[in-house]
Length: 213
Image 1 (cartoon, rainbow, N blue to C red):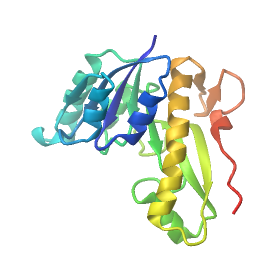
Image 2: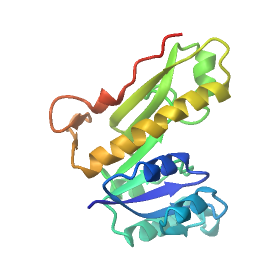
Image 3: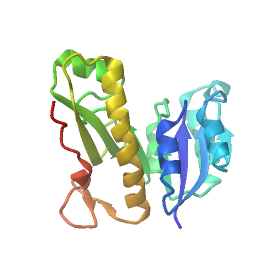
Image 4: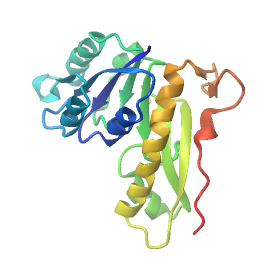
């Protein structure tokens, strides 16, 4: 059975969605850069080992990443799952886990990389928004996309209402993507596309159609 390590910085709602899904894998540990992260208690309630690698204790990003990698490697995971982990990782760290590290981003990549995605989507006047599961590469929010889910942007939406609609889809597609990885069903092509089951069919099967207004 494959092992994963989940990295969080806060409440870890995507972490909880993965734990609640009871996937055929072992969650070896949940690691946070913040001892106050509420998700640590949630993981402990699920019987999962937890650990803190406080970024404030390190002089720079590189030394923090070295310590974080050492903590992760102690569990020998097959996959590292970023679930609201709010630290930009060095290229060296990402390259060490290349092809074995997933993230979920609250936008339809490649649109709205970085922060404040819901605010920017509303300001741009887009009609649909959503979330993307992708493999992590050194370029922020630009790795090969595993799958996406689409939600409508409704008249009168605020950042909060749009965020809640997107988050519900994050909780649906992230466990599915993690399960696919651990089942050996994902392949990254030399062109950077992600194939499901080795067929020329992108894992965008996760996409959900916009809800009628």
